View (cartoon, rainbow, N blue to C red):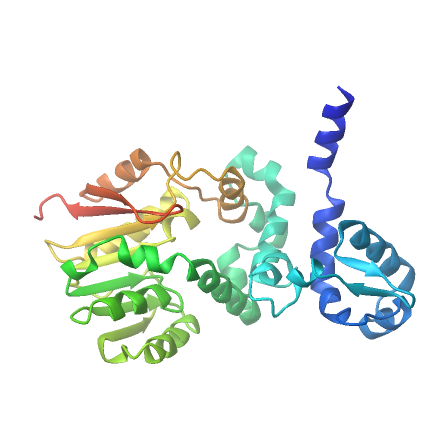
Length: 332
């Protein structure tokens, strides 16, 4: 029983996750590169109190993130994983003033989310995640960077696992910086794409298409997917969009897609599926941050049927994401 108690205490402890977040937010791994520095030097540089800083460094030492030297502390090879230029996405995930790290703090309101179904983020910060991003440009920029990084390794599988060449025009709804659509266009030179997202994200997508030399076949509209979408395309792509929203707003997004879609067109939804790519921790994150969730196939089917959509097929694109293809019931 004592072993069980110790295990649960370790699972429940907040000291380590918060110590890592504070270390990244203060930039300690970067500051302690190379030969490192004394506590006094770092405290003076960062404008923090030296005694509490040494308490933090003591715990980071126990974790192997930093190590003591004859003159102070320095970052270990293991701790170098937390360098801001490590390129692994951890800085965004942990930094308390970036979109990912700030969003994680919504877990402090998980009781509220489980009790009400509402996002804990709103309760903690006084407004929802998307309003926060709109009002704080540095959060928007870090969120876009986070999404681009998340898809980097997934894109080849997303492109190769489906016959995108069936279509002549695709609207990427909420397509971010355009990395996925650009890769699809590169792979299919007869295809034209149209990306819709808010500015300044949309502006960055223009640069992405130019960098991939597909700007002559890629159009960008700075707009919300709650507003009317470009009409008449063969396919409307929603990649990792619907899980960010509760059913009410998911219906609004699908309604806009159906409103714009050609009669024989398709609505393509790429997401992790509940019951297939289970990630229980991520499920709770979607709830606490957005009030959303990873839906099961039957839930997608029910959601779509309200808009006259029929599930045509489900394709596993990668080990993390499936594509659900919907057609209009009156279409072909």
